[in-house]
Length: 155
Image (cartoon, rainbow, N blue to C red; front, side, top):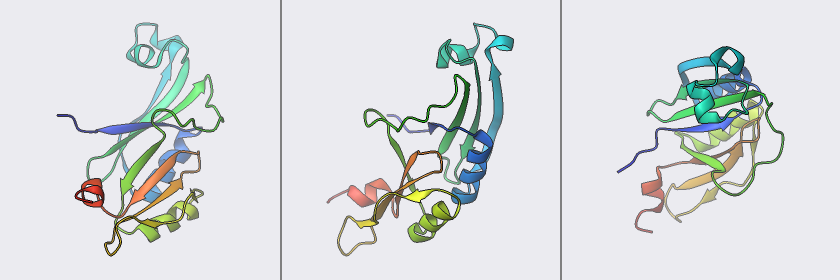
């Protein structure tokens, strides 16, 4: 059995991303921010092993939701963050369950993100809604009104 502990997201400005995720989703800082510089860490560091030797300088932080879901934000400084649009292969979004989906969409937009899709009711007659939003850095965040089991179980 496995459980998801966190998702890693690349952002161009770590401090702005920390502020955004704290204001919009009420995430708190669990650990960090941490700075990594290959020139001072040396080639045998954990970061070089995990990220590869091409990463020379970066910052990261672990944020946590009230229910224990984590987001690890990465600001790659050398080489710098890529402005290319996200690819569709592999992981391309995260999904969060929120208390009030409409209010959360408003906070996303108010703080520089955007609503990417209309809000969909996936089970007629039930309060099972989802919508795609985006943070100010281009990461797609799907918002759910209920957890995945409730939304898709026994359909």
